[in-house]
Length: 200
Image (cartoon, rainbow, N blue to C red; front, side, top):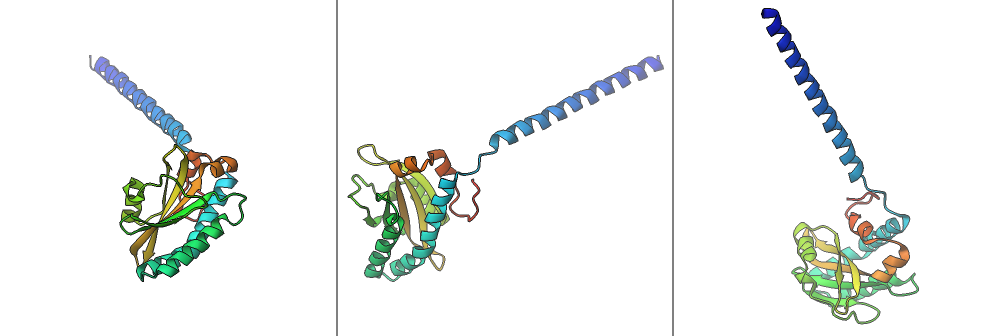
């Protein structure tokens, strides 16, 4: 009788061990599958080039714009924005980039574009602008203007001694994105706060 109980206990223990092993293997397999699925392809050369171009111009012009906004130097702001706009569009056949300058509350102060951008909304109404002001980080989004035209925007906080003096919006025409071969998914996955070519 004791032997039968001992044999039954051993069988139960073996079954439990086998079940634990199966669960462990299934967990490892699922983790591997999920890990493989979440791996995103590296950004294309066009996306890397666009990011480098945007960051180089932000590095060049943001400090000046922020300082002049803080000092309420309207001529300095105007001159800096004009130079930024020219630098962004200077090497292209068409002017695919436009700029909008917002105050620290997200209200549009002024903008630069080749032709009037019809139906430009008050950018302060967009959640992405509120997030940029709150988090003091560069973020991107896409939006549709009146008439259905799609544009992509990169929103960068203008900081002076850690205080947000305004927000700079860099708009990119969807025609440029299409010609460059940069998809919306790829554009949105880039992290403009880092210098590496990784994705979020």
